[in-house]
Image 1 (spheres, rainbow, N blue to C red):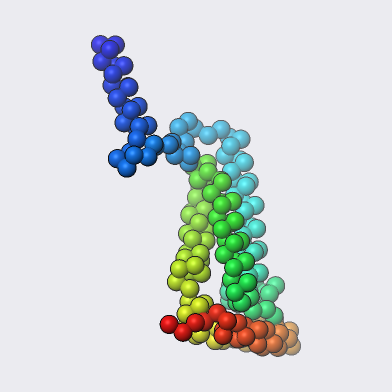
Image 2: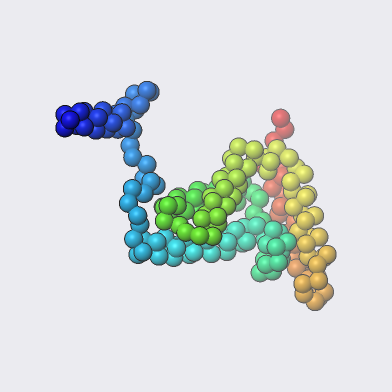
Length: 192
């Protein structure tokens, strides 16, 4: 009976940890929790995730000022996003850093509503990376730039979130910034 148990355990370990059909050695999943996390680990994950989420949102609104205005964040009402190639590349690099930082927080240790926030944040970062690196509308569709300017102006004009004089100043600043955004089009958009 003991020999049979030893053989079953050995066979199970060989299958689980041995080479895969492609010849690669399997390694344990680093996000798999084999024992219950301690309260300290849960608290640390919650704290780290809360800090990361808040930092990401601050960064997101700064690099997406039109979207910030549309969502009711008015700290960047006078700005348009950097859409030149250097600005796009900075955004890609920063998104990759945010994703790496997020993935350092073990999802298995994240609890309650933070689990949804984690999944939405990871999905949003990956989606933006896909758009910037693969779909590349910024490099293929000049309409992206005019739509962005139009949304930027409309979001300031159509909503009564501040006195008109203050919104007019934001509008003037966005109109001034539209020139730099349009200057990026010839460098970014290539003919097929």
